[in-house]
Amino acid sequence: MNRIKKGDTVLVIAGKNKGQHGEVTRVVGDRVFVQNVNLVKRHTKPNPQANQPGGIVEREAPIHISNVMLFDHATGKGERVGHKVLGDGRKVRVYRSSGEVIDA
Image 1 (tube, rainbow, N blue to C red):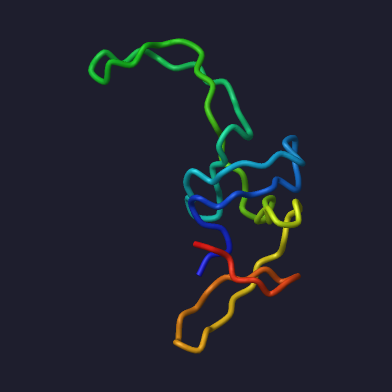
Image 2 (image 1 turned 90 degrees about the horizontal axis):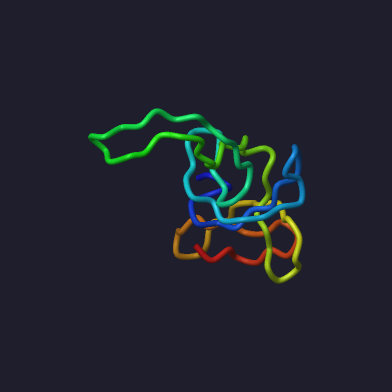
């Protein structure tokens, strides 16, 4: 079970975007794409078949999963994540500081 999932709000803790937070749009292996964070400019060729114009396109680049933390809206800080097995056998993610179950 991963600590970071698609749809989570995360805080960037290292790199040029340190301190920014946003929603995870996708997870690919050990890297995450965060909405409006780590934007890079790429030169793209036009593709008439996909109806895609060419030019300089700004898009999100991946961030290593070790450089982000789950953002807790209650405390307003990044929190560490642990796992816990509930009485009914479900495995859930919990905040390490408070033990509160993370809504997924």
